[in-house]
Amino acid sequence: MSFFINIWRIIVSAWKHFVRNLWLALSTVFVLVLAMLSVNVLLGVNVLLNRAAQELESKIDVSVYFLANTPPAVLEQAKFLMTSLSQVQSAELIMPDTVLENFKKQHAAEPEVLGSLAELGENPFGATMILKAKNTADYPFLLQALDNPQFNFAIESKNYDDHAETIKRVREISNSVQVFGLILISIFALFSILIVYNTVRVAIYTQREEIGIMRLVGASNSFVRMPFVLEGIFLALFAIVIAGGIVYSATVYLEPYLSTFLDGADPGLLTYFSANWPQLVGAECGVLAGLVALSSWAAVGKYLKK
Image (cartoon, rainbow, N blue to C red; front, side):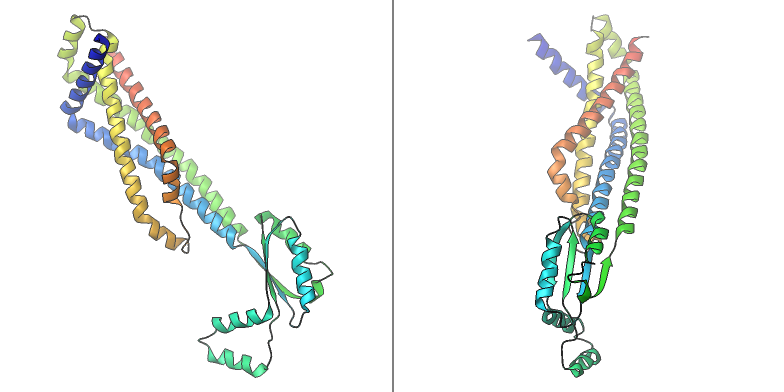
C-alpha cells in the first residue's frame, strides 16, 4: 500500500512542480515541439521526394511509331515479342484509326490542321506501341530489343521519354535533405537537453527548502529525484501532443496544394502518417521522454551531490 502512496505523492509533486514553473515549462515545451516538428518535417520531405521520384518513373516510357499501312500481323508480332520479355511491364498497341482520332481531338481547336488532314483523303498515321519497363534501368535494353529484324523494318521512329537525370537529381536532393535534417535534429536535441536541464535546476532552486526538509526526514535520493524526472516526462508528452496536432493539421491543409504540384497525384503524406503514426509516436515519445528523463535525473543528481 505504501508503494502506491509513494507513487501518488511523486505524481502530485511532479504536477505541482509543473504548475509552479508554468512559464518556464511552456518555454521548454516550445523547444521540444520544435524538435519534434523538425523530425516530422524531415520525414514528410522524404516522403514527398520519394513520391516525386516515383511519379517521374511512372512517366518514363518508349513510344514506337510504325509506318502507315504496316500489316496488322507485323504489329501483333511486335507486341507479342516485346511482352514476352521479362523486363517489360506493359506494351500498349494503339491502332492507326485510334491514333487518327486522338490527333483530331488534340487539334480540335486548329481548323487549319484538320483541313490539311482532310485533304489527304486517307489516314497518314501508323500504329503506335507504348512500352513501359519494370525498372528504369531496363529501358536501354528495350531500345536495343526494338532492333529485332522481324519488325524493325516497319518502325518509323522511336521516342524515349527519359527522366533519368531528373530522378537522379531528386534522389540527390533527398540525400542532402536527410543530412541537413539530421544536423538540425541534433541541434534541437542538444538545445532540448540543455533547456530541460536548466528548467529542472531552476525548479530545484525555487524548492530547495522543501527538498532540504525532505532529506532531513529521511527521503531517499530516488524519491527526491522522481518528481523532477516525471515533470520532464510531462513536458515531453505535452510536446508530443502539440507537435502531433500541428503535423496533422498542416498535412491536411497542405495535401491539396502538394497534389497540384505533383500533377494531381496523391502526395502520400496523409497516408504515410496515418499508416505509421503508432510507430512514429512510440519512437518519438520514447526517445524524447528518455532524453528528458536522463537530463532531469542528471540535474537533480548534481544537486544531491552537494
